[in-house]
Image (spheres, rainbow, N blue to C red):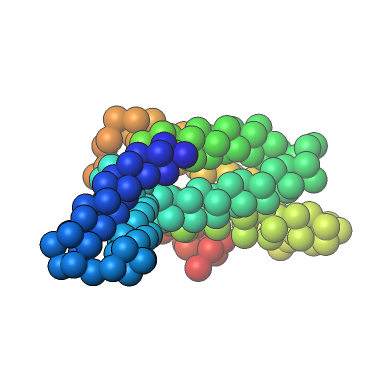
Length: 204
């Protein structure tokens, strides 16, 4: 609303100046001068609106509003999926770790919203680790469903349960280091976690 109010007087001045120039300086008829002034008024408003929109689009740190909104939307969608699995796993050994992961993920997303440049430092977390967590949870639910005493399935279930404490620590550290801007340490730890998940056969 503020942009509209500010652009109106400026556009009016442009229209008035244009009318005076074309009518009195170039001796164009009043009707044509009014049409040209109206065209100038509309054009100036479009230009001002475009400039204002571009200003609003770029945030601090070179992160665009569109990019931020898309990343946060995807992040909250993955958090929603994690919460759905949490509701199915209320009596399992991973419940405390899963609760902690939800809290840390919420804090991380809120921190990115508060400080958009943190999006750059959280890219791997948002695009890989949240996805990996959702996939591991899906696998865990499926394994428990078919766990009828088979030693191999039981071993896989145990492996997932042991891995979740590692995932929880990584999520906790992600938030702590975002606040401290310790990017290099964070990337090293995330890479180690990624390798661990691959070695355990839990993620690609």
